[in-house]
Length: 116
Length: 109
Image 1 (cartoon, rainbow over the protein chains, first blue to last red):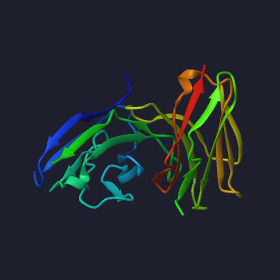
Image 2: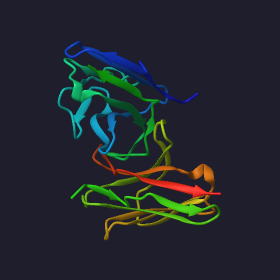
Image 3: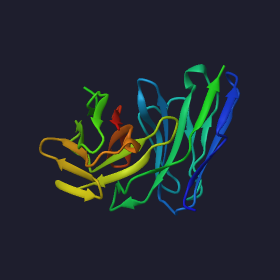
């Protein structure tokens, strides 16, 4: 089954404790992206990757790191989480169209993170 | 001004009616345009994408794009109660993806 998987689905942690949220896709998509969704603020892009070893900042990259060492995986790292990073996080992937467009993103199930 | 703006909603239509959802964007360099549907507590799912001016139809859904007016819309014909959800408009330019805040649609039986 074609899918984007995220782990963990739910996480409660404390301020400053490093954590990683994994994202994996089995569709051989070049493009992968991380979003956070907050009430009243909508879906905002954190980082994206057009292909292996290529990553770029989205609108809200502060406090997050990513890496793209393999095509299928795109982990999101919070080196020192803070309460304002409490949110619902989505990973997504897509085929790339032409030189920079995409064909529509497929989203993972989401990770609900609470930082106390 | 937000980069992607949608009707604030909520939008309510009777079953069988046409639902019209609108979106405007500010970046003229935007290349690709998408509509997603998000049910409460679920992840967004892709409905349609459109790249060129004009209409694109897929079943009960029609996306319309007007780059000169920086406007993209989604029409849902023969609306069903199962179409009740939040609809998100998204634009992409060079990989950077921006979503609107969404319009919540309720289809009443």
